[in-house]
Image 1: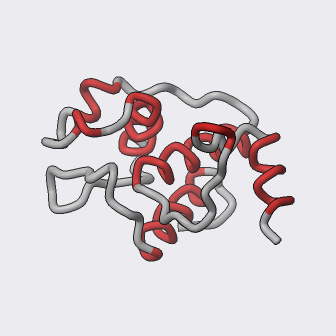
Image 2: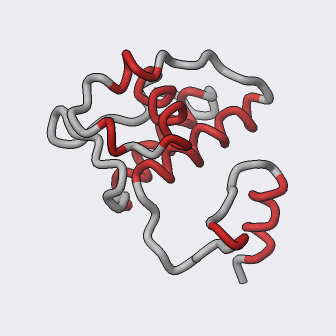
Length: 120
């Protein structure tokens, strides 16, 4: 039932999947994965590339920044810089932690505000 949505997201460049071209639909989404997805969605919706955050400077605020996967670092930095995503417990990003439904809704709402689809 989800295959058409996944195919559309892959074709739009929003999803890249896992090794072996798998989607793994039953796995929870990690914080860094959602950040990468939201950053790609923002670029897609805006039809442009936004300014790239200084990764080292932006992520330096998180004591666990070294655990953010290389493929997600720029996306996380972009979203932190623009106020779309925050860390947890002050100085922790917890990139491998599962995203809660509440966190996902907050990030999506901030994304929609950033794109000016909804008002503050």
